[in-house]
Image: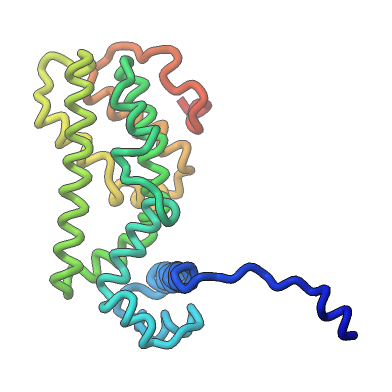
Length: 233
């Protein structure tokens, strides 16, 4: 028995930092599920702690407030995982911002931007509710809108530079149109409430955006090639 015990190799040691990261992710994952299932007001820090299997003091120590926990849950959902780069630094966004075809640039932005909505939009009702009663949540909510508007403005400026916008379309108006159409609210209205498939929604969004921005010209034949909504166009 003694010799058998000596043959057992110890597993790799987990550092304190890695344990803290794992605990943080577990809390965020539990919070995400509860915020979606119960809403913001009905979800308590005690509920989140119990679901994550940690002491409630750990939740407060790590995130301080429920509003900051919700904010980080939204950010993690939008990113798709811990450690992911900001949207403007992702390969698909760089591709869209350098794409010489306006149709293709919009299609790439729709393909991947809608995927962000698909991950983050389930938390949107909780964030709306939090913003009504919590000043910090309201500040974050408005900052998200500002960041989204700024990112869309950059894409619109690229579309203007490559001559994609129709002659009567000012860049500010184009950015307003993109901001209104490419939104969590529009996504939820058509996918959650109207029951559209995500691919159908992407195809509609791409066609609507290009019709608004570029006018009636025929789209480039390979604009949506290889994208998830190709068969819906």
